[in-house]
Image (cartoon, rainbow, N blue to C red):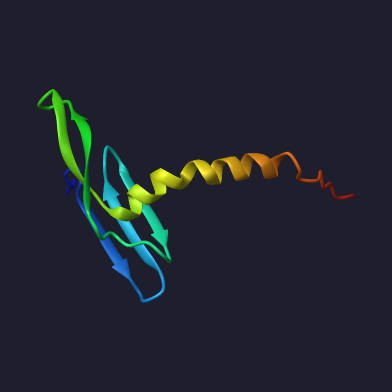
Length: 89
């Protein structure tokens, strides 16, 4: 059964927190720091009603979207300094 937009499930084992959120596609994120609380809202365009609607968004997703640029910059900088490793046959 297809879940509606904004639906999320979460699980925690004491150390690791996993959240699955449905936006236009399912997104799964794991963290050992952030949780789903507080749940905020974001505006998404709905083709069914042809206007923007409010969709529930867990905090873990909001934090990921806010800080993912820093991780991308670090990966880009590290890729320029990786040594070329080749093995001999």
